[in-house]
Length: 445
Ligand code: SAH
Ligand code: F3S
Image (tube, rainbow, N blue to C red; front, side, top):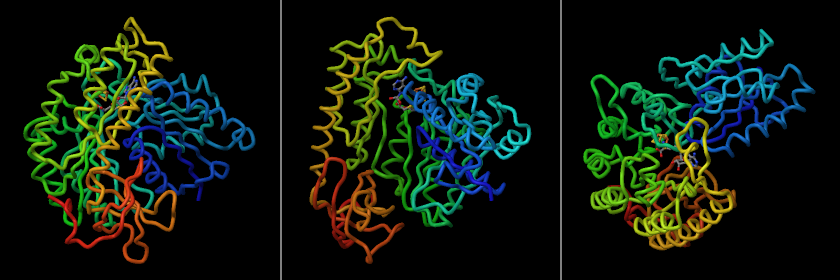
């Protein structure tokens, strides 16, 4: 068998796409290798969301030059968002690249690789293509899996390159999604994360139209599945029906990733996010009222063009007010072709760095306070592996998406859902002890 080495950058959707590519190439007798020196084909699945993500890819391509020199038959391909954004410019800057293809071409990856090997000249495939649900996988899934339910995004956030790299919103039919999940569950999967760039806009482009709440209900009926997660939602499309579904659909977990980006109305308007801080807080309150156990996480951008110290204060206040369980903070990065990149009042790097540190300070305080609330609680944990620091310990996640490490070897194993009592609250994880089901307070709804 020929050897494939896959390097994945960026979001969960890329992880999902990489699995599909590995599955499709497996059908053509390529097996995965963790060792790039051993590979016949190296594919980089790339991200273009921030400049840093692109820099990483070019620096990796630079590193691969030596490998290609020693082994000229090695095929190097670049796929994903950068491929779609930069197209032929990638091969110009990094001539070792033999193949460039965007996500619409994933279904054809087998042919593309063969063509690049056969023709021995650069192959480029970054056009639009009809949406196909590729479900091929390289091996058995673990207890958790991602499932893409829609591609693309129709929003026009002024900072974001995704509508350019992933195209328009297109939903997969519910039947195809349910069939994929049934297949995963038959192989031992217990938890799925439904993925979309604006996952709560799911289904409005289908005939007949449907929505994420209805999809939850259908996925909930898949026997053997224990948990449903979904990401990423946009506050703009958050409907009362979805809020109700989060409360009522049993397998939907008590965790909601709801990007805020900024707590300042002035900045939100310039970002074209379609909501105000007041509206966002109203949604959070409605969600918490519907499901008091709900944990929130969010994305924040600091240093958006024109952001003042006052705007930053508004963001800090909002973070405190919502009291998130987890916050991802990004420094604004101008992206080609986006309106914000051409806005005046770009913020210098050192100001972005300072604001980033200030946000992280508040985040650390807020999330630590949330963590302390969990001390002593017994929670439902899906065991998904061993602890990163101590391989003798098991690790898993609560329904509210917290990592818990605990000593359970011999008594429970990967794929089990067990009650664990939190015995220690650490900065990035929890430690716990296996408990009895009767003690579990957040076992399920
Ligand atoms: N579809 C998702 C966004 C995907 S990008 C959503 O609607 O939230 C993930 C996160 O990257 C965004 O939420 C945003 O916080 C950040 N991001 C996107 N573009 C960025 C840019 N140009 N600079 C810095 N951060 C950015
Ligand atoms: Fe990007 Fe906004 Fe869509 S952040 S992915 S344009 S919702």
